[in-house]
Length: 106
Image (cartoon, rainbow, N blue to C red; front, side):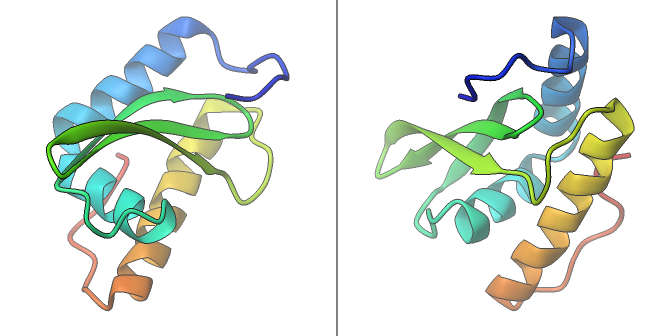
């Protein structure tokens, strides 16, 4: 976790993580596999966000492991989270050589 105070209130963090986990679990897994250095992960869920990055828990060989993936740049507004997650997903698909599926982070 970042040592700087988060620019996002707890209700924003809860809304973002709930949305990603409920609506985009496959996309979250792709991000963690490609950008989090966990290609063997079988599941992933977002557990938090702050201005510096996103926090996840991935399942690898049946064990849960925490994972942090930094944003490409510091974020200060909620709308930037969506933009960054979409960017990360597209980058992750490129790294894994898989086609992106639909819209992410809406």
